[in-house]
Amino acid sequence: MKAILRARERGRTHLTCQYCDESIPLWDELEQELASEKYESRVREMEATSRAGIDRESRDLQLEYYAFAIAEETSQKFVPVEDDEFGVQGRIELTDSSGQPSGRCLHL
Image (tube, rainbow, N blue to C red):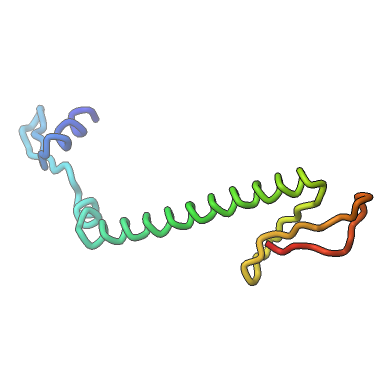
Protein backbone atom coordinates (compact mmCIF):
# COMPACT_ATOMS: atom_id res chain seq x y z
CA MET A 1 0.00 0.00 0.00
CA LYS A 2 2.84 2.41 0.80
CA ALA A 3 4.35 1.78 -2.63
CA ILE A 4 1.06 2.68 -4.31
CA LEU A 5 0.65 5.88 -2.31
CA ARG A 6 4.25 6.90 -2.91
CA ALA A 7 3.93 6.22 -6.66
CA ARG A 8 0.73 8.28 -6.85
CA GLU A 9 2.40 11.15 -4.97
CA ARG A 10 5.17 11.11 -7.58
CA GLY A 11 2.63 11.29 -10.39
CA ARG A 12 3.17 7.75 -11.65
CA THR A 13 0.28 5.94 -13.32
CA HIS A 14 1.67 2.37 -13.23
CA LEU A 15 3.77 0.10 -11.04
CA THR A 16 5.79 -2.89 -12.17
CA CYS A 17 5.08 -6.22 -10.49
CA GLN A 18 8.27 -7.42 -8.79
CA TYR A 19 7.40 -11.06 -9.56
CA CYS A 20 6.27 -11.06 -13.20
CA ASP A 21 7.42 -7.60 -14.42
CA GLU A 22 3.91 -6.86 -15.67
CA SER A 23 2.69 -3.24 -15.59
CA ILE A 24 -0.07 -2.62 -13.03
CA PRO A 25 -2.26 0.50 -13.47
CA LEU A 26 -2.65 2.61 -10.33
CA TRP A 27 -5.99 4.05 -11.49
CA ASP A 28 -8.84 1.82 -12.63
CA GLU A 29 -11.47 3.00 -15.12
CA LEU A 30 -13.88 4.17 -12.44
CA GLU A 31 -11.19 6.22 -10.67
CA GLN A 32 -10.21 7.81 -13.98
CA GLU A 33 -13.85 8.66 -14.70
CA LEU A 34 -14.38 10.16 -11.24
CA ALA A 35 -11.17 12.19 -11.53
CA SER A 36 -12.47 13.92 -14.66
CA GLU A 37 -13.15 17.67 -14.64
CA LYS A 38 -16.90 17.01 -14.94
CA TYR A 39 -17.01 15.21 -11.61
CA GLU A 40 -14.48 17.46 -9.89
CA SER A 41 -16.53 20.57 -10.68
CA ARG A 42 -19.70 18.87 -9.43
CA VAL A 43 -17.96 17.83 -6.20
CA ARG A 44 -16.67 21.40 -5.70
CA GLU A 45 -20.20 22.70 -6.27
CA MET A 46 -21.68 20.25 -3.76
CA GLU A 47 -18.94 21.11 -1.26
CA ALA A 48 -19.68 24.85 -1.57
CA THR A 49 -23.40 24.24 -1.13
CA SER A 50 -22.88 22.11 1.97
CA ARG A 51 -20.39 24.60 3.42
CA ALA A 52 -22.91 27.43 2.95
CA GLY A 53 -25.59 25.37 4.69
CA ILE A 54 -23.28 24.57 7.59
CA ASP A 55 -22.28 28.24 7.90
CA ARG A 56 -25.95 29.28 7.98
CA GLU A 57 -26.78 26.64 10.59
CA SER A 58 -23.81 27.77 12.69
CA ARG A 59 -24.92 31.42 12.58
CA ASP A 60 -28.48 30.42 13.43
CA LEU A 61 -27.29 28.45 16.47
CA GLN A 62 -25.10 31.34 17.64
CA LEU A 63 -28.04 33.73 17.41
CA GLU A 64 -30.33 31.26 19.17
CA TYR A 65 -27.89 30.85 22.08
CA TYR A 66 -27.43 34.62 22.26
CA ALA A 67 -31.22 35.16 22.40
CA PHE A 68 -31.48 32.48 25.09
CA ALA A 69 -28.76 34.19 27.15
CA ILE A 70 -30.37 37.63 26.84
CA ALA A 71 -33.80 36.26 27.77
CA GLU A 72 -32.35 34.38 30.75
CA GLU A 73 -30.44 37.45 31.91
CA THR A 74 -33.64 39.53 31.90
CA SER A 75 -35.78 36.82 33.58
CA GLN A 76 -37.74 36.16 30.39
CA LYS A 77 -38.25 32.84 28.62
CA PHE A 78 -36.79 32.02 25.18
CA VAL A 79 -38.61 29.31 23.22
CA PRO A 80 -37.02 28.02 20.01
CA VAL A 81 -39.45 27.44 17.14
CA GLU A 82 -38.79 24.15 15.33
CA ASP A 83 -40.71 25.00 12.15
CA ASP A 84 -39.20 28.38 11.26
CA GLU A 85 -42.14 29.48 9.12
CA PHE A 86 -41.85 33.07 7.88
CA GLY A 87 -38.28 33.27 9.19
CA VAL A 88 -39.34 33.06 12.86
CA GLN A 89 -36.76 30.97 14.71
CA GLY A 90 -37.87 31.57 18.24
CA ARG A 91 -39.80 33.79 20.58
CA ILE A 92 -39.17 35.46 23.89
CA GLU A 93 -42.17 35.10 26.17
CA LEU A 94 -42.36 38.22 28.30
CA THR A 95 -43.17 38.17 31.99
CA ASP A 96 -44.50 40.90 34.24
CA SER A 97 -42.64 42.38 37.20
CA SER A 98 -43.76 39.52 39.45
CA GLY A 99 -42.35 36.92 37.03
CA GLN A 100 -45.74 35.74 35.76
CA PRO A 101 -46.33 35.30 32.01
CA SER A 102 -47.73 38.51 30.53
CA GLY A 103 -49.20 36.88 27.42
CA ARG A 104 -46.96 38.98 25.18
CA CYS A 105 -43.98 37.75 23.22
CA LEU A 106 -41.30 38.85 20.78
CA HIS A 107 -40.83 36.76 17.65
CA LEU A 108 -37.26 36.44 16.41
